[in-house]
Image (cartoon, rainbow, N blue to C red; front, side, top):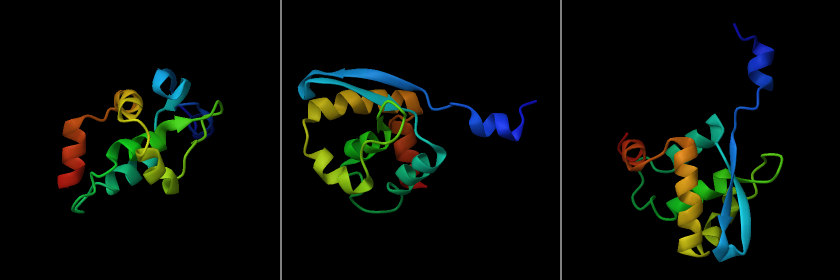
Length: 112
């Protein structure tokens, strides 16, 4: 049986390196924390037009540095959304896969 300490000290946010030629290099994408996942889902719930910049929102929550810390804050979402759609799609797809987010999950959160 896992102890409290073992659970809290575990590295349970897997990361994956993604080549993004549109940006000229590679990035690290990580699994979201529970808090980040809740914030992402809450941003989709019951608000007209909230799917605007959904790719940039998810990417901002999952791009990380070599220690797993987020590269972007919530205040960077609009600027990140102004980057190449192809680059965002490339990272968004990996973010979706790592976090178990597909169209069904986005629709369910939006309609909850």
